[in-house]
Image 1 (cartoon, one colour):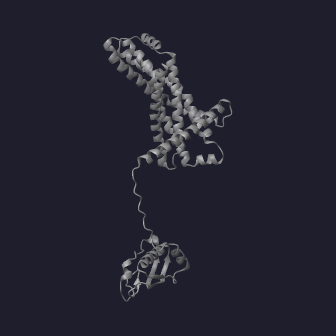
Image 2 (cartoon, helix red, strand yellow):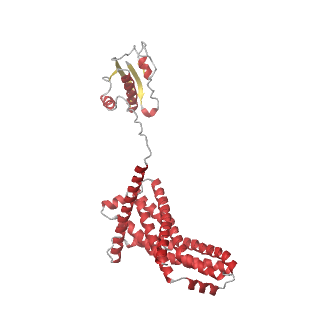
Image 3 (cartoon, helix red, strand yellow):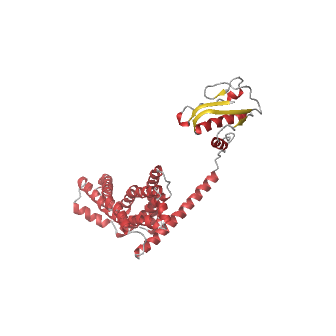
Length: 375
């Protein structure tokens, strides 16, 4: 017989651990779980272990846990447990527990299968391209409806996104492009001064900014500043179940969230590109006047004569393409983010990295196309 006494409250920390070896012992006193007594005799296979809980006061799942340990140890030795003296509630709880713990499954051995890995990556890439295409198509149709005045987005959301992506970014755009123009002028001045071609620094700075640097640097800044903010904002809405609420009410997420974000970038990026060109040329002008024997009117005249309108058009188109890329990828990353706080940070990081890498890759594609068409 197993004698139990006192209170058996799990949170008290006073529940003793049942030693399975006690079932193998031989003795003349009752098996006392509280005082550490000895069993009444040898309990061999087919024996019956009775429970005496007359002295038990208050109890909770701590008692059930102890009895479960006793039952599992007894089952290993072929001993049956007599639960007739237990309260009805305790018998029901004990009956819900298995007689033995399940054996831990051995994890399958992972083997490197390059074709399987490549196939999975390819399927994932094609799926993501399809989702992005659908998102871009919905945004394009929403933009067309916006031009006709039938868009389902709120004008206040569009203006708020334009303010965040445009005027709020002027300071950092000014600093970055001014320094880029100054660096280009400095590098050009060091080399061209050796050949007495100081005046061509204006050509170098103007053409590099208009054709490449202003559009690319502005896009990289916007990918890190605005793209990451879009992804973090949408991921936070995902975690707060705001996206689920919009879907329950039948409000299209592409019209309510994605469309204002992308249109804000499409409207502001070309203007920021032109502003970046102007500020970058000002940086090159300051360095050239300080380092070279060039007059201000001469520098401006050389700059205006070296840049064709087609170069401005080329950079303008690139800035719009960069805006669409940053907006679509950032919103997509935010929409597929998880619901925890860590997922918000991960989404912002992925949006920044994807935006920067995507801008550079798309710029290289534009460089190839410009070479093909002769720009």
